[in-house]
Image 1 (cartoon, rainbow, N blue to C red):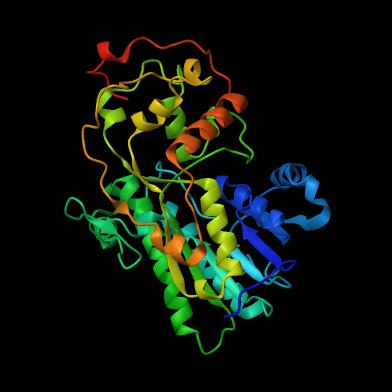
Image 2 (tube, rainbow, N blue to C red):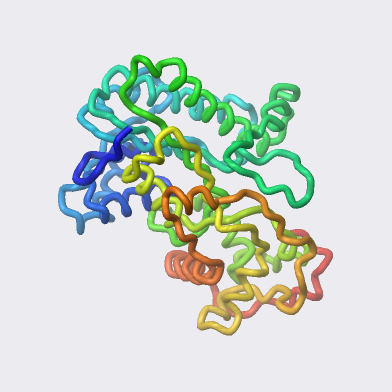
Length: 364
């Protein structure tokens, strides 16, 4: 499918989210026109104010329930590209359906609406997750776009409501993405658009979306604040939590750029893309902040001690570099920009915490 060039119109669902807000920012900078879907006028007006420097190139539409049949029927009319980011991102559900219904029904619903009402749409881009890829594997295994996380799907099938919320979330991402590819395959003779899926690893970076207070931050940024910002918790994080790698990371601005480049490049069509700058442990971010003007605002941790576990390869983001041209932002800039954004929006007492070395038995 031919690439789409500005000033084409791009519909972005879930426009008030952490990733979506940056996708819209980059689209507007690239001279696209953007329509964002939100659940309320309050969220829409916040975004209008955020993007006021782009004049009338950003507008919004209200969609209160993305799982409702035909929810996107009107929104997809007269747009050239659809970027679907709207999906639950949290780990507090009590039942798989709390994830599955909006994730799967919302994703398939967008595709159905485009097939039936989006005559101009040439490409649909779905923001999935590296959770769709990660599965139990030997040490040193580097995941690629050929992998699928069937493990968590099986866990949820077997355990139902007793499965962990993380497994429920991961399974929903797998099922939603597979449902999207199944829809494309089953309707390829009837549709005039192709599909791209973007699978970010742990997303960090500065926040520009609407957040009423620190307790309302999205999951990944909330965890960054917990481990990095001094006094964000009653006690400093444990040694184990800071020096053990939880996975891969990527800057939100790189994720946004991957979405934009997926629109601009012909060869992106019908592809999956992992976006990951590599693996990390939290102490690495702290080490980049110690000795800088931000030092008094962050935990000290254990700067002289090595990781308790080697940083494994985890997910491989090289395909996004090769095809989409993504040059990943490094840990130093991610640490600085994420921290600066957090302390600007949610100031905390800038005093050095108690020495972590006396609290090695505490949990984070």
